[in-house]
Figure 1 (spheres, rainbow, N blue to C red):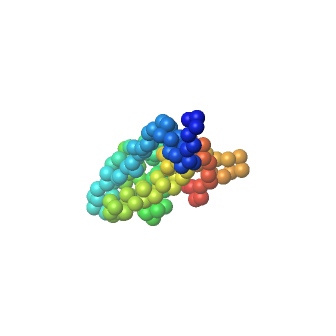
Figure 2: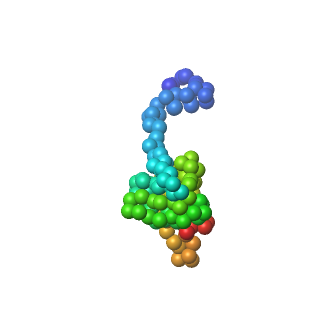
Figure 3: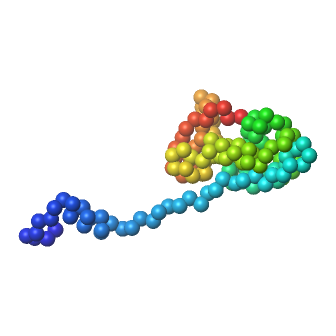
Length: 142
């Protein structure tokens, strides 16, 4: 502070803010993957289920089980692809995948995908965020 010069509160506040370091804006590069699906007769084949499972850091069987419940159709795994025994439009399939990621993968606190599924000693299924440490219960997980 300068001797003999009285600054108002607003002037002091402005001066303090100009001396603060500039913070970088953190951007999240995570993007929910879209299904590479094609309809073959009465079936829908998702070719990139393994890549989606890698991005989600979950088993492809867990994603397949979720899709079975949500689409009310039997699903079989054919190596790296997923075969749904129904004709599912790509936009409907992508909506179900987006909902899976929002419910079981992306943290509700920091919005990062760095989560894992764990079970507590009392038998509750929880999502644990490895980025911010948030823990919250999950309803109806497999």
